[in-house]
Each structure stands twice: as structure tokens, then as C-alpha cells.
Length: 377
Image (cartoon, rainbow, N blue to C red; front, side, top):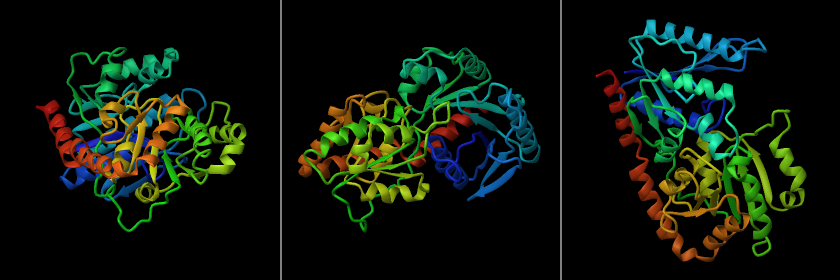
């Protein structure tokens, strides 16, 4: 099969959960004998083509227009998909929730939306109004899909409150975890004072509450340090979320927080391995990759009790779940690991076993391929 993904995320140039998924999934599809193309908008005025271990990536020129950029970008994507299809017939085009809105459907191709978390989903979770234009585009996009894949039961059930799947097939298939890359590293020394966070540095990832929790923790554990890995997030006015944190929490950040910025994806396992505890107090996720990645490495993990958190961690058996809005609860869960060292080996062994079963790359790959094939049957 030839699967073409519409996405502007990929670890080579932009970190993020969707991009990490595409790299892991795309490379695995290739090993099974399938062809993979990824089409998205780049950041230059020229088209850039990249081959990542067989995954063909097309970074299209960024639009020069200031109004209607989305339409111009989609026109370029349509043209590229048509070109690729003529050269090597495409069987499946897959996008995120809004990705099909202005895509011209080619009759020989089946179109799939993977629910990574769209506008309606996050509007509900963040308790904000649905923007009429963004909401309309998402509805229009859903009407073009021949099938849907949800990365968790939670994202499926909460998306269908607002958007109709129109009696098309819907399958719940988790993101796969590369358990060969994310495996215990025996030759790495664990820093007993290192707490690790990985993810976009923004409000919904819970980093602000985690920093507030560190202020409580260092009262009893003064040598603890929080290491933050991830890309920057900016407000609409262009100001930096990280700078906001530094302005408002300068004293605690100076004492015990270090921002490392974006690191290459293949360096992330070592950063997990060096940590005593990995903490990801997201306010909301569709599934979340960082928690099961760290769990696969037999690391003690604190994850959010909201959204798909309970689908990922069984509290006190495979990890700990916290209220991400409550700095006291976050601090309490981190403290529990510190004070219950003798229980960690059992929890982290259970965690890796759970990830090996639930997020197994080969099993998830087969589920996706079977779903793709069912659409063409």
C-alpha cells in the first residue's frame, strides 16, 4: 500500500507528538513493505524534499499571502498529492481533524482522519468557546473522511459529542511506542536529584503547576532540579510562554529549573534514563506519548488523572496519576516516589510490561494496516 500523510510536523524539523508518531509509524510501515509519503507546508519559499530512512517527505513552499493562507497552502498540497499519485498510486491519504477541509478527493483514494485532538476536542477540555470558522472547517473536513482512527477511547467519545462520524468506520488504535528505542539503559547513571519534563512549554502541558510544585518540594528536598525539554510556545502577540514563566517565577526557576529547549528525538531516551522521576502533568491529552515512552524505559512516571490518563496508567501499579491543576497533588506524587523507593522496581516493571502489550509497535501497525485495507475492500 501507499499511504500519504498530510502533516507539517516531523522530528527532523519540528518536535511534537504527531511528528514523533509519524516517524515511528512511517518507518515501521516501510519495513512491512509499504510506501510512505508525507506532504506538508515548510518554512521556506522553496520546496524541500527529504528522505528519512525511506519515508519520502515533501516540504512545500510557505505561502506569501497574508489573507487566506490556509486556502493557498491547501492548493499546494492538493497539487503535490495529485503529482505523487500519478507517479506512484496512493491508496490512503491520512490527516488530522481539520486536514481534509479543502482537499480535492481523488476517487481511487480512501481518506482517513486520525483523531490527534482537534479544535472541538480542545475547546471542551480547555473550557473555551468554539471558534466559528475553525469549528466549521473541522466539520467540513469530517464530511470528507471515509474512516476515522482515534488514538484513545477518550478522544473518540469526546470528539463525537460535537462531530459526526457519519456512520463511517471508527477504530480505536493507540499511538505505537518504539520499545527498542525507549528501552531501559543500563549504562546510564541516574541523577537522584533530577526531575524530567518533556513536551511543549505551554499552559496545557501543566509546566506552570509543575514549577509551583517544585517550590514546595525543595523545602524538603533542596537539591532537586527540574529539567525541561521541549519546544517553545508563543502567545498571539508573539510573546514567549517561557519568558512569562521566568518573569513570574524567577526565584524558583533560578534555584531549581533548567530549560534545555528542543533536543533531537533520539536523545530523549537518555534524558529519561538520567532522571529519577519523569513528570508530565498535562491538563489534557488525546493519548500522550511521553508517559508511555518513559514507562517503557522503566522510569517512575507521574501523569495526568484527566483525559486518557487512566487508559495509560493504573494508579500505584504502573505509575502515579495526579491532578495537574493542583500543585500540592503534583508535589505529593513526586514525594511518594522519593519516600517509597522500595516499591519503584515493581511499579516500573509493571509499567514496561503494560506498554509492551498495549503500545506494541507490531500489533498497532497490523491494526492500522487491517483498517486501511478494510476501507478498500
